[in-house]
Length: 420
Length: 120
Ligand SMILES: Cc1cc2nc3c(=O)[nH]c(=O)nc-3n(C[C@H](O)[C@H](O)[C@H](O)COP(=O)(O)OP(=O)(O)OC[C@H]3O[C@@H](n4cnc5c(N)ncnc54)[C@H](O)[C@@H]3O)c2cc1C
Ligand code: FES
Image 1 (cartoon, rainbow over the protein chains, first blue to last red):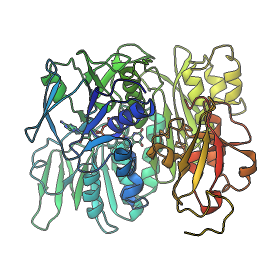
Image 2: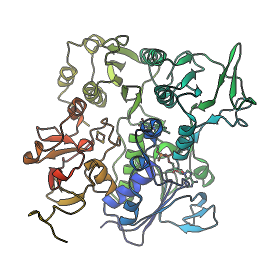
Image 3: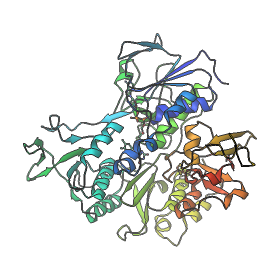
């Protein structure tokens, strides 16, 4: 057993990060009390399914739960749902809840995630037809309005918007995607990948509008909604799905005096600027082990690994968080797997033909080293890409682009470097 | 309750899987029929199987070595799983499977797997 039984870890947030932190503590034989305080009404669930299998109906409620609710009781984890933390007193080691209760802690973990960035154009806040997606209840609401006969306008061409577009389109709904910038996914990937997804959605029958200027949203008396688009003709739809980014939930931490900038600042061990307070998941800004500085990531692997890092620190077995980020997305029957973080200015090397409809990969060279990759429907290439990126292998664009040169051969050329 | 099975583990409602850890530790895991070994491991908070992608065949952090006598009895492997085995942290062998793809059925009651030293 680790930790005295009088220790009390209080975790704010019942998402993947909060749940994983609790589980990791128990797996490390932590003997103290563990409490998860979650504003959500559902036990911790998998967010990725909400825009994929759960939205399409392929997976049900039990499948999206990370664990059955009984698992928490069995492992003596006090999971308090529908419970919101209002404030933290770090000097007294106390949290105050919405319902007036005050709980003490010896270690506090903030895993508060974030909420969708609201659409601020006139009419959006008052519209009855604007939907967002972050929680299971959001997914249920969205599922109830997307039907084979409905028309849906997706605002924001990021992964979330495109996944919802793909599920809605696959159900038969009429889908328009409105992206303000000249290409899809422009913050996260290179032009060849953006163009691939644009073609994919158009082939599937999505009306994709780039450089769309959404100016105003108007509910109409017939129960539908009109999206006014600057100079272009307005669009009529049954609903608007807005996916224009995430606002990390940092207010609670900031009010308690924690350092924060685009996320609650943590060191490589998940420790915040205040003793006995840790943070994990989407709400954190952590040291970027690959490129220096700080970064905030929104991905399930990051939520789980930062949570594992915090748990290890709490049980006195600290190990720095240095993992290379990775992510995936599914649209129609295409699976994208990404490793590393693409940066503007990277040299994008396409392996395969992004126009052929066949699997292909794009490798990103920075300073002659492979620093990131987007792999389309090719798990085997992804396996190699993950290692190439983790080892920052120096490779020529010509070799990477040449499918006759096996990726594994490029790895072998650097076999002397130990793997991560 | 009467049971016609010679195996004391058999005949009970929930099939069991035995996990052997690299340090010699042995644990028994209950896996519901229709549930994957990965899901059962994470639900029961047993260490050694991470399941970072929730069973989407994307992470290979659910790698196990299946005891040879069980290999043939397991459901077949999809190409995607074979490809993903390239991604495991510990070198895969012919006995390697991704445990999110091992879905429990009454036939698999008593399955024995060994866990790798690392999953990532
Ligand atoms: C629809 C969707 C699809 C996604 N798809 C993918 C994917 O394919 N691959 C991938 O890698 N990532 C994906 N992601 C991202 C990934 O799921 C998230 O990065 C990850 O789940 C974040 O987990 P978290 O625990 O940090 O945050 P959250 O899951 O947001 O959890 C935060 C928790 O904190 C609670 N909370 C907040 N404030 C308080 C308070 N004051 N008091 C009490 N509780 C509070 C909330 O109720 C919630 O339970 C997706 C995300 C979404 C929304
Ligand atoms: S859980 Fe990710 S591949 Fe099995």
